[in-house]
Each structure stands twice: as structure tokens, then as C-alpha cells.
Length: 224
Image 1: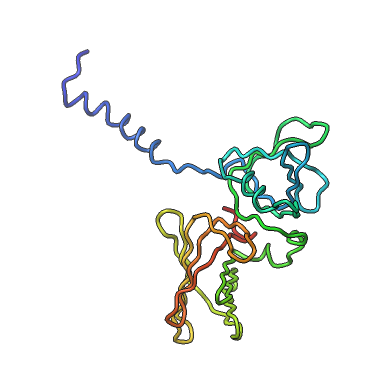
Image 2 (image 1 turned 135 degrees about the horizontal axis):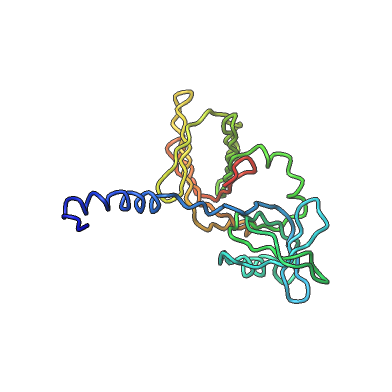
């Protein structure tokens, strides 16, 4: 049977709708990946990752082009300092003589010289943390609110409203106690000028008419 143009259009409409629905499905870049914290070390020309509180070691493969290998080499320096890394990726690969498999890294959250970051008691409760220098400041946010630390001033606990910004950024704001506070975070590589630590967020704190620059990262209570 030959379809007339109106009937042909009607027949194709479900197909178009199905294609549109398929095209609009959001892609989950974290599907099948795991976020892990641990220690990085070099061995036989390879970078190895040892998860916190484990004895297993995995050969690092920078599958997401995060720049982790170069960042680790620069940060460790000639002294080959112990490095703490907070990473997301996929564990797999066959066990070899010097490793228990391969860690295909997709995202770098933070990288810093540290020998005790695995024992941080606050990490799992935080949704995010930000800090900066000159003057020194810091923000810790959790489901209970945020606490602002500033050099020479008392701790300032505040409730906050969190909003997502197009492009993957976040905004935390508070109007409590008649004080307007804003913390802006953008997904951009950021290096702490004092420690050389690498973070995955650039931060900007606006408080008391001042704008303070710094870096930030997601805490353990935010799985993204």
C-alpha cells in the first residue's frame, strides 16, 4: 500500500520521538567507576596506587588524560616525597609480579604531599572543602552546614543554599545573621601556591566585601 504524505509523516512520528528521547538521555560519566583515596609511589618506571588501608597496589593508567603522571612527577620532585591521591576510575587488569592489576584513572580530585591524609577523620562527612592563602582561609561544608575559617578570626558556622551552575560548577550562599556569603566553585585545575597541592576545583569566597581566591575539592560525602 502506498502512503500519502500525511500518513507517511504520521508513521514516522514515533520514530522521531524515539530518536529524540534516546538523544536526550544524560550520559553518566561515573558509571562503573570507583572513587578511591590512597598513596602513589614509583616502581620500575611505573606509577603505583595503593588504596588507603589496603596492601594491594595497582599500576596507574591515565585513561582520562588527567595529567596525573606528570603532576605526580612534578610534585614528588627529586626528594620523591610520599604523595596522597584522590582519584576516580576503574580497577581491573591481570595481576602481575609487582602489582595486583591496573587502575584506569578517569578523574583527579586532588594530589598532595602527605603521609597522613588517609587518616583524615572529617573527609567522609564533608561534601566539599575549599581553602586559599594570603590571607589564609578555609571552608568545610557538610549536610549540617558550612564552617568558614579565616586567619585571625573566629570560626563562622553558617547554614547554606547550594546551587548547580551550568558547566559543572557550584555555588554555596548564605544570608544568615544579616551577612551575605558566597562560595563559587568551578571545575578547573587549581594549584595551592603554598604546598603545590593539585585540586580539581577553583574556588572564590566572597565575604565582608572581599573576594578571596583558592582551590577546592569534593569531600567523601559527595559521590560524583
